[in-house]
Amino acid sequence: MQHIGAREFAALLDSARASPTAAALPLLLDVREPWEFDLAALRADGLATLNLPMSEIAQRVGELDPARPTVCLCHHGVRSAQVAAFLEQRHGFTSVTNFTGGIDAWSVEVDASVPRY
Image (cartoon, rainbow, N blue to C red; front, side):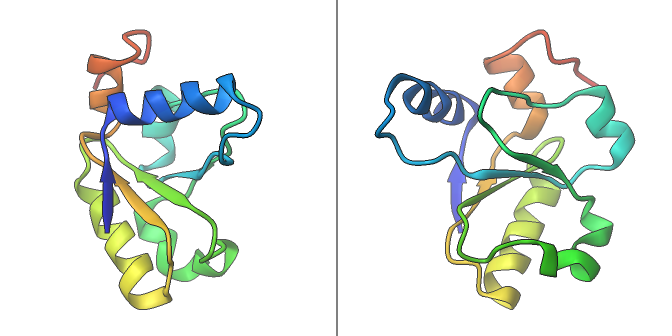
């Protein structure tokens, strides 16, 4: 499993915006509960985000494309790491990445307008 931090993810978003030839942005799979997502979400132009709680992943994994680059996000990076490992090991996802530090790191390191909780 790959890992990406908040600053690295911000740089990825910036490079995609700056260059029309840049690789397509990954799917941001936010595995937090809906109340968490509603409270603090990572939103960026051109970024497809899906809020699919960890508790529903096993039942809804068929909604995801195993070949699509996917970055898993949660509050601090623990749930997202578990989901990324599950997708990779059990469902053959070929390009899944854990967002280390989660939405909390995004708020602290990149975008202070995203509430911390």
